[in-house]
Structure formats: structure tokens, C-alpha cells
Length: 391
Image (cartoon, rainbow, N blue to C red):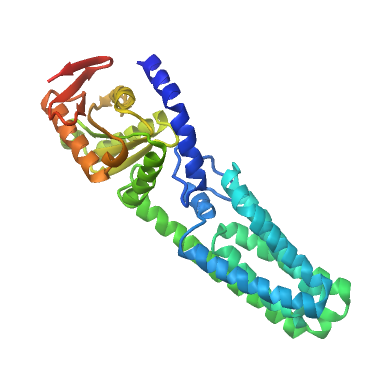
């Protein structure tokens, strides 16, 4: 079985590589089981926020950036060469930012660097062209708002603090008495920066919390049904472009109600969490697993044919059979498989077919995998690793 699984990975490799390249250029990044946290992005959702580069927020960001660039160009004409500094910084970030964010292993750090470059350059130019009296100073809160629309809250806070320090230092370098001469204006500008930062980070934190609540199952940490339709649509378009299949594996835990009745819901919850952990660990990063409700789960296998999906499902079945909680309490699973290519990749149809195959697996004795075959309604059942039986 392990050799078969390895062979499946090798055969699937070309389509998988192309699929991942498409994912890198799409508007969303999936929540990966292999996610590695950083102090800037402690959760997958925090990093996903950095990676989003489409939709209404991005359109509004482009409008705000265009307006800011327009004012900076005007400032170049009226204030002299210092106004060129933030303009060049923005153009550099606009040119390199999207590629660097998507391709970097830690995109949140590039996002922080880009924010520091833009806001630092803006603060320097404002300080050197009049301090709180400079027209560029009015753009500092706006720039914070633009950065906060996509950045992680911690990055926004760090960027604002650095920009405030750069602004004060630039003011002192230009004229040591400028801060004292315009103390009220300087204080008002810094307070405005602080208020915009506080409001932006609060909204960003609430957004991340809402995303987590809406797409992650609170018990198992797996994806839930929210967002499944949109994510599958992205995978469908990629599969049709690459002419690769998509397979679905549905499974639920055998006699799970009896486990709850006999051992209590705490044990049942522990089993669900352990099954979710082991399944997620055994899958590759781009293979998505969802908890559909209760003890029912769904695995989406992009780029994987039916034959290879059988190998994956059998490995999952075997993995689940080894789950133990409270020392000796275990569980088995029944699985159903469906697969489609081209125009036959339709979520509702594939999910219904996989569910019918799952029902057959249960009727045939549970702890086994069944495959939905099309167009013949007959179901083939995998009774154990490497064994295929026609029913």
C-alpha cells in the first residue's frame, strides 16, 4: 500500500506542481495542514489575509493608492525633491510587492518591510518639507489606513511606531526648533496616527476572528462547510484548465453514536479531535479535509485520479483504525469515493456520488471503502488494503 501511495504521488506530480503554481497566483491561499507559524502570523488565517490580492478590498486599496500618488506628484512640483522619496518607495513596492508576497515562505515579513519602506519614506519626506505643516504629513494617516487594509495588526502597529519616530527625527534634523514651534500640530498629527492605527488594528483583529469562526470547526480545527463552495470552484477551474481530475472522499466514523452513549461525549469529542489530527497529518498540504457535521468528513483531492484516490482513502481508513483515546477506545471508518474530470467536475454531483458510495460501504459491513462508478451504477468495494471486490 505504501508503494502504491508513493507511486500515486509520483504520477500526480506534474499536475500537482502546475496546480500549486496556479494557487500561488490566485486570490486565496488554502489553510495548509503544514502551516508554520511566525510571530507576525501566528495563524493560517492571519497569513491568508496578507496573501489576498483581489476583491473589493483590493479595488479600494488601488483607489486610495492612486489618490495618494496623485498628491505626491503634485508635491514633487511644489515642494522639491524630498517628495520624490515616498513616491519612489510606493512605486517600488507596487512593482515588487505582489510577486514577493506570493512567492515568499514568510509573506508577512515582506509585507512588514513594504509598509516600513512606504510609511518611513513618507514620514521622512514630511519631516524634511515642513513637519506638521507639510502637505505630505496629511498623507501619513491615509497611508496607515491603506497598509492596515491588508497587513497583520502587529505589522501595522510596528509600522506606525517606526514612522512616528522617523517623522520626529526628520523634523529635528531639518530644524531643531520645529517641533517646539509647532508642538500642537505635531501632537495632533501623532494622535491622529495613533487613533487610525488603533481603529485599523481593532477592525483587522475582529476580521481575523470572524474568519476563524466562519471557516474552522471549533472542535477539530478542520475546515467546515463555510467557504467550501468557493474553494471548490477555484479548484474546478484549475482542474479544467490543466485537464486534471478531482476526487472526493467522504467518510464517517462507524457506530459513533454507540461510542457516545457508552463512553460519554467527552470521549466522543476526543476521538473526533484525534481522528482529525491524524487525517490532517497524513494528507499533503493541498489536500483539503472538511468536517461536514457530526462524525462526517470530506476530503478534496485536486489532481488525483480515482485509482490514486482509492490508495489515499485506504491509507486514511487504516490510519483511523489505529486511533486510540483513553488508552484503548478506538474507532473505524467507512469511506466513499467519487471522481470527475472536465465538465463532469461538479461539486453537488460528486458529493452525492461519494455519499452513495459511503452508504454502500456501510451496508457491506463498514470499515471499508466503496467507489462510485459511472455510468454503470454498480459499486466496487475495497474490502481491505489492496483488495478490490465487485458488488
